[in-house]
Amino acid sequence: MKSSFRAPSNIALVKYWGKYGVQLPSNPSISFTLDACATETSLELQDSPGISVALDGVDTPSFVPKVAQFVERIAERHPWITRYGLRVETHNTFPHSSGIASSASGMSALALCVVDLAVRLGHELPDPRQEASVLARLGSGSACRSVYGGLVVWGETPSVAGSSQEFGLRYPGEVHEVFRTYRDTVALVDVGQKAVSSTAGHQLMEAHPFRTQRFAQAHDHLAALKPILAAGDLDAFIELVELEALTLHGLMMSSRPSYILMRPHTLQIIEAIRTFRRESGVPISFTLDAGANVHILYPDSHEQTALAFVKEQVKPWCKDGRTIADRVGQGPVSLQ
Ligand code: DP6
Image (tube, rainbow, N blue to C red; front, top):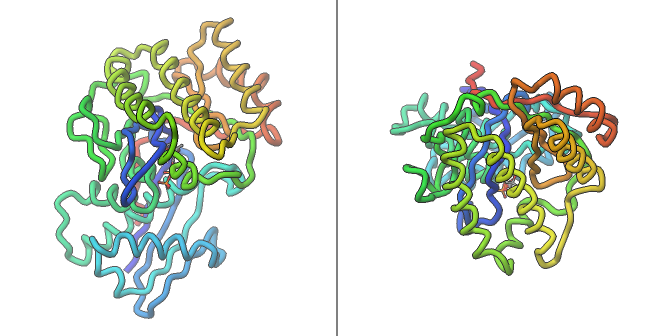
């Protein structure tokens, strides 16, 4: 028995940074699900025990511990899975060397395969997509937001009805049409291995001197986004999203030990975006994930101008001039 899914990556607007217990978030987050950056994964149940993983058709034993840990974490909810051997075949649509984390798309795709197989084996699940989000979260926190398209919230917060610590929720509030087709051009600044992993970064939030204020701020930001998303208020959106990105990196810089994931070219690109926006009035903005790359966000109606700007003023700062064109996407698809 085999199941295959394509699941997209996502980019957070309000960032998840800090966790406790079994992959529970210290603060709520919201993300755009992407489209082009995705992982295609198939999971085959086998009679003989053991786990094997192939990446791009090549057996990759270094991926086995990650899948084994995932299976261990989901076994309490899905004990049936431990009775099978597992063959995972996976492929990222974005280049392996892009510095784009594949854990959100990869764990989401794998979780969707597990839930699909569970249903086909006759296990009753009241809400299979929600179950996939719970399992994806156990693999990687941000992955739980990749099981739906559009805007997805994770983490219980008073301003979003139905929000949960356990799973991602399709954002239930009103969303202005400008945000349904938003663009994300990813500027690839540093394509190497990160100096400090997200897991280590989350841990450093446990004793962070600003943790209480930060976690409260994330709730406030979620609440503040509500009218912004409904009205399509781009100025307020840009202000909040850039503040979140810089806060994330500010938290890294003020952790103990302190560390910096931005590179000089990250700052050059941020400066170029802010200058261009100020001079042209074009609503182009940035966010950052836990790395040096810059996600350049803009409405699709400004695509031509934004792409010309990227070509002239961003690409020179990118590794080998590389960027990835992405946009808000519709969520995962079954590949069988
Ligand atoms: C900065 O989801 O990669 O991208 O739960 O340890 O797998 P783990 O962490 P991960 O952290 C992502 C952090 C972030 C912000 C976000 O996506 O909300």
